[in-house]
Length: 259
Image 1 (cartoon, one colour):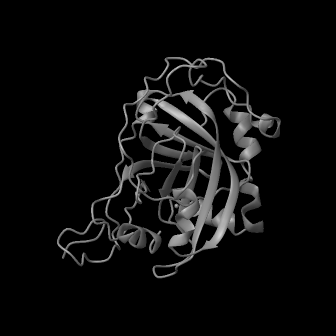
Image 2 (spheres, rainbow, N blue to C red):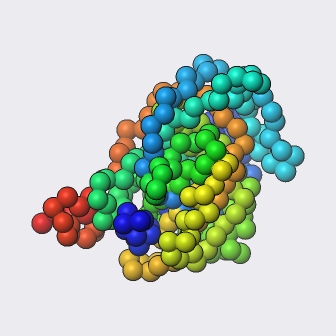
C-alpha cells in the first residue's frame, strides 16, 4: 500500500467511416476517469488482421454503432490471454494518451501519460476477469476533460460514453462508461476495483491541487474488441517527469525532479 498512498495523493478513436456521425453525437458529452498502476505480463494474443463478426452492442448504445467485433474465440476454446495496455482514448473528450508503467518508487505521477496501477496484484490487462485501473493528472492534454465533465450534473453526460484501450497485441478494447464517482478519498476507494472478478475499466484523476485527497473515478464495462494497426497500438510517447514535480526525497524516487 506504500505505492497506493503516493498514487492517491497527486492523481486521470473510434476510427472508420462512421466517425463523422459519432463525433457529432458525442460532441456534447464528457467523460472523466481515475486510474493507476502496473501490469503483469501474459502471453499476448495475436490480433486478427480484420475484424470478424461477433455480438452486437446493446440497444442502449445502438446510436453509436460499433464496427463488427472480433470474436473472443470459439466456444470451448482456450481462454483468450490479454495483452498489456498501451494507449487510452476517449474520443468525445479529445483524450489520447500513452499508457505506461509507473516508475519505480514513484513519488509523483508522470505528465503526458496515463499509468496503470499495482496493488497486491497488477491491474492493467484488458480482457481478464479483473479491473484495469489507470490514473493521470487532471491537466490539459491529460485527464482534465474528465474532471471538467464530472462537474456538470455529476458527470451524467459521460454515462454511455466510450473509452478505447489499445493493447500491445494490436487490439483495442472498447468500454462504455457506466458510473462516475466523485469526491472519493482514502485507500478503501480502490477496494472494489482490486476485488473485481469481471473485466472492468477504472480511470482516476485528482479533483483538486496537491494535497486534496478527493479523487474522481470513472467506471466502464466492456463492449467488445476490435483489430488495431501496430502504429495505433504503439504510441511514441512514454510520459515525462512533470516540470513542477516535487524534488525527489530519496535517491531512487520516481516521477520527481532531481536537484
